[in-house]
Amino acid sequence: MEFKYGVDDWPPPGETLLFAAQWLALSVPTIVIIGKVLAVLHFTEPADQVVYLQKLFFVAAVALLVQVLWGHRLPLLLGPATVLLIGVTASQGFALDTVYASVFWGGAVLTLLSLTGLFGHVQRLFTPRIVAVVLLLIAFTLAPTIVRLVAAGPAPSPVSRLYFTLGLVAATFTAHRVLAGVWRSTLIVWSTAVGSVAYALLFPGLEAGGASTREPLVAGFLHHLTGTLEPHPAVLFSFLVCFLALAVNDFGSIQSVTALLRLPDPARRISRGIAVTGLANALSGLLGVVGPVDYSLSPGVLASTRCASRFTLLPTALALFVLSVSPAAIGWVGAVPPVVVGGVLLYILGAQIATGLLVAFATEAPFSFDGGLVIGFSVLLGSVFSLLPPATLDAMPVLLRPLLGNGFVVGVLAALALEHGIFRR
Image (cartoon, rainbow, N blue to C red; front, side, top):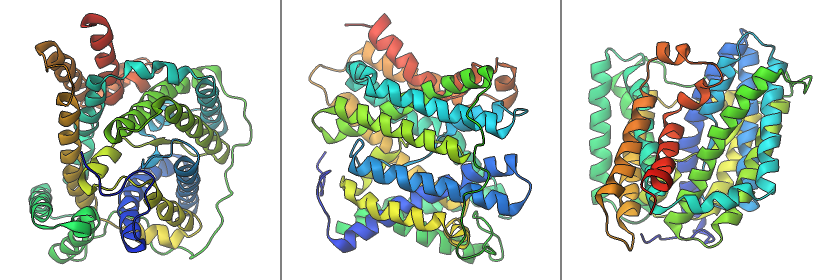
């Protein structure tokens, strides 16, 4: 796959800002959605909930800056880890200090394991088939999230939201076919902006998906910090399982981008990237918020924009930092309707699936039936686990819930077992 800008290229200033706005448009809704779930879970006061969101934006800004300049040095978006959300919700009944002390120690252990070179040694396990599974699983295991974004909301009916989503996706693909140059490269930004305006015109008077805009312009966020780093053994063990899943996710994200861009020295990028992720999670534990992970949807963005420059994420990191000190700004930028986010994600994940298929078939060895089983069954199993009803997850042991409740991790582990076990060549 040819890219207009390589990983170390600097696009022109105008294009850099457009690409950065595109990354920001993808980052903000995820931070706001996951942050609001946990903030409401922890606090009853709206002011405390906003502080939680501010701390999430701050951690995302710092981690993104360090990753781009000194960590894996890749065009990879990051944000709150959904797998840690499972760990936090499974630890209800324990004090917040106990919960986030476990986040701190989980991040510290992840950093230590990375610095010892352990993750670099397992790099050889991620063959082209495994990378293809990672890319495909991202799209299929995010399907329930897209359904929630599209089906839930204040529109007159779920059917009208579905029609709106189909129209937005059709318009986006048409624009992808017609547009060229920077207009096509920044299509995600325009699709988000035009979709938000169209939603407001079609459904006037309805609230969007962001936080309240009646907040102060500037405010600090150093409140509700973790007061003790003494975790409960059971809670810590549960979070260590979560961090195993997080490490697999982070490893797969970094590996998929290095394979897509055909970059040298992937083991070093993986080791440094996971170390920075661990440090960012340790910082999150101290601040009393859930930690970040590199998002696996980034290859889909790269494939759709044809821009692989890591430097386009620097203005994004700066914007995230500005948001972290401005509750009012968080309210405004978080106002993109969830149905628009769902439609844009459908377009991005379509590009993600195409990229996964390219990786699967672009190998020297001919594609075999056994190879199809490795990829097909792993994606199918991961999709099934991502669709398990809450009652089934609640019936699982607490220590296994973070692992078996994550379809992405289940699918990747199944692919590793098939590729290097049953169908080992």
